[in-house]
Length: 341
Image (tube, rainbow, N blue to C red; front, side, top):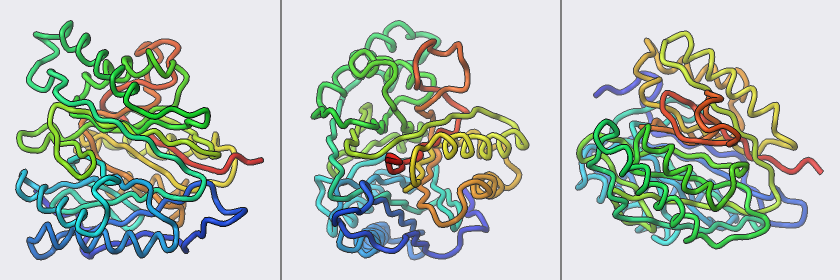
């Protein structure tokens, strides 16, 4: 694998700290991305976690989402151990991905990106479903069994969440690469309803890379959900493409649609992107640049490359009447904003 020329130094992305006082933003998001320059995943994890704590300032962390692209279980476990030596294990979630991107650049090898979520007005509930029984099954031979098992897993995932009238967004991280992810989302929708906002991505599908993370531990053949609740708004968009110019164009269009639909002051952007889209680019920094034409470079951006994405599917026939679904070749944008009241 190669390192992208846009990404050569440890990166920290953070705005000025936000205090949880009256009139403060309803949700605080900070993003840190750090490359392992010394071949020491544990030290990289510790350093990234310390930088995230600094970026959050006086705002307590409620959850941390990890996107990492280390090569094997040993390195991934060492990275997690480093992160959880600084942060409580109970708030650490995430997945093994094909890399990450933030405003300062992109990476695809031995690096970690941390999304920190906090604030006095945010509540986060999490759930884990293990042993879904689909990791070794193929769509061609086992479609009916995969559908049944992932529908059940999606229902169990939602059942494990603490629900609230202020639920706004479900973030899903799963070992269920496209097209399996569609069935997981359908299972969740039997409980949440078809209109509920769901986003997320699937773990790297390569052997030894299929992990999701829950409370600081590694799991395979599993799915994690985080339910974000509070007085904030969510805008979603999804775009599909598999050719260089179209990937760049749809990144710009998807970012623009999500921003246009946001109700109030944008606070952060999440982008679950397809590693296949990136593979079609001559220079994958161009996709990030297209996003920045719309987002600017100040709004916190957490992006990761996945093996299947959840959000608004760019195909009206995929799941008629559903706001979100699961697919591949997509970039799924989520803009978190104030309610605009």
